[in-house]
Length: 196
Image 1 (cartoon, helix red, strand yellow):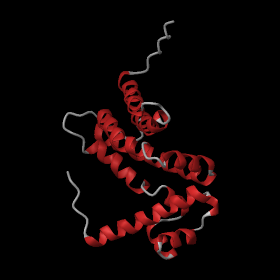
Image 2 (cartoon, helix red, strand yellow):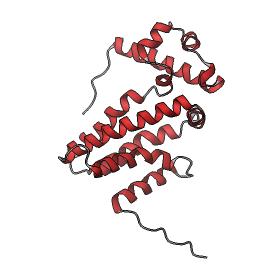
Image 3 (tube, one colour):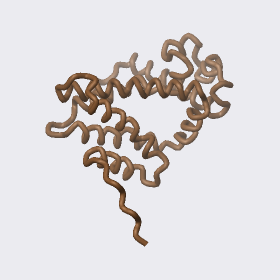
Image 4 (tube, one colour):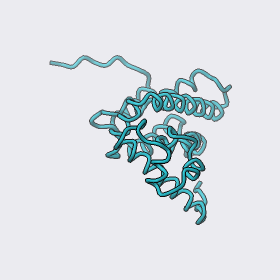
């Protein structure tokens, strides 16, 4: 199912939003999160402070500018999967298609340092993660016809959302993602000892 094309007005709003988010990230990486004000971001993006707040709820939302669509994409990965494709395989494909390009972005290392070194951003990220886990768990439960809050659905949602963190920093991120999903699919096995 394809999304209808955006109209001119929507494209302009999306471009303004992206320009603001890009300016914010550039300033945060350059100066540090706490040293940048909303006014600084507005000036860098050549918009008013009011315009910044029309697009974002606050400074944290500027760092996680794509967060708003994450829930919708997770739910779509479950509900719009190909006929005969398992929920687990659909989520595997979703992580491969969405996270690998993000992880390859040259700014990703700086972004991760920014989040890890800023208590407000770490807390915001944790709240986002919980919200996404709850949304994904509910979508999986609905799709499988079981009660929301089902432990197996909650466990799968949490592990799927942890895959990027587990694969980050690995030499071959794609292989790491595949290995984590293989463990989820086949169950954990004790790793063999390396032979001398």
